[in-house]
Image 1 (cartoon, rainbow, N blue to C red):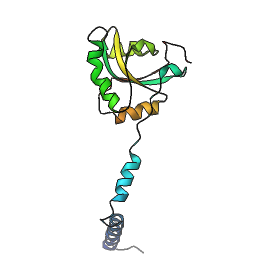
Image 2: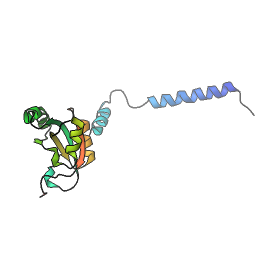
Image 3: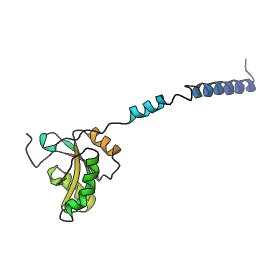
Image 4: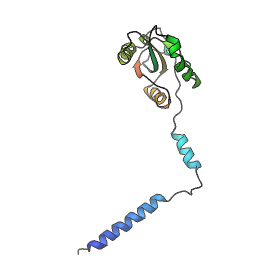
Length: 153
């Protein structure tokens, strides 16, 4: 037997109203600590940087600033170095040629024939990505490659 159309619409409307009421109920409005805990639990921790000379494995460098070698070098890069130091990352300018493929990529991105940069080195792409997400300063690129300027200890 066929039900009248009006009763089907009424049943659907009642079901929708019950579902929306159930979805809106929850904790009392006074318990904000659960919300604060949830936000804190989803904020990732700052990743640990590594010393590129200690590994022969591929590494990931977040290049935060790049200049043309000879164009003020450390003076121009000092604000990036200071910004990273406040976060606990001790960096110095280094030649992107010390990371396989980085010099060519950064030269292509910046137009500098002989780039010099400030980079933070991580063991994993995930750590580099987390840093890039959390860092308020600019980043030029995240590049993967091996350290080529010295043998690992």
